[in-house]
Amino acid sequence: MPIFKFAVDVQYRSNIRDPRGETIERVLREEKNLPVKRLRLGKSIHLEVEAEDREKAYEIVKKACDELLVNPVVEEYEVREL
Amino acid sequence: MKPKACVVVYPGSNCDRDAYYALEINGFEPRFVGLDDRLDDYELIILPGGFSYGDYLRPGAVAAREKIAVEIRKASEKGKLIMGICNGFQILIEMGLLKGALLQNSSGKFICKWVDLTVEDTDSPFTNAFTPGERIKIPIAHGFGRYVKIDEVNVALRYVEDVNGSDERIAGIFNEEKNIFGLMPHPERAVENLLGGEDGRKVFQSILNYLKR
Image (tube, rainbow over the protein chains, first blue to last red):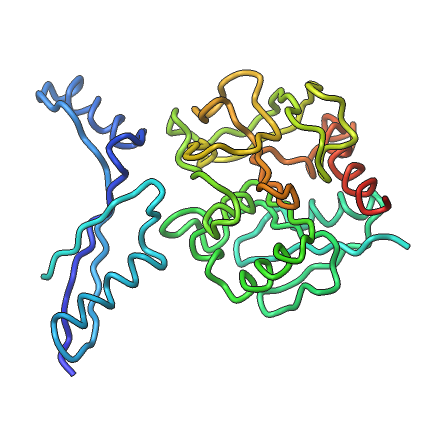
């Protein structure tokens, strides 16, 4: 069976505070003098799945997100094929 | 007969022995249980503090999907008492047995200190030995203790001052049926004056009162 490669980008929902992102944003703005307005630190999870076709592979990735990789209470995600 | 209680030991738990000791000196018959054990024999199940699975992905996320989680869910459906302390609270949240989320402290720092709390709800198996609104001192030690409130919850404990950015200064909550208690402070570390205080004892006394009723 073919192998498909994906990246899952996970971010906190926009109304959720992100102290790590805020710290990095402040350093870029105040120490590096870069006009950064908003910075959010998320995660990127790369995975390879074996499946009959692209569509089935995508379903597997979505299941992985829903069952473990993402906490839907505070996070949202996007899947990209690599 | 002393009530049987267990402490679930996850890879990375580090308050399991403290919890065991607190149970022992407060009139329980404690046991450690592993991830493949059954929980039928216990009237109280403690999910201890620590860093299960190194907090990989999110604190509690991996532990919440372990085989033992099925047993914990079964016990909760039977109305058994479950107390999740610190990482145990994070695991209960990740399991969906308690509402909301626990995220990184607003300061971005790990906080380890004794804090003042108020007991908001004394009508529960875990808090009946306190007086309503009682002010108590119990230590916290966490990096991810900022409680994010999504829906209405039964608030059990509140920080007197904002320590980690939690919504409404929430430090501990119950589920709807109040047989599950999740809290960031460590009552098991506050059971002897030698260690700085014994306000945590009343949590264990409350559970005894409830079980002996």
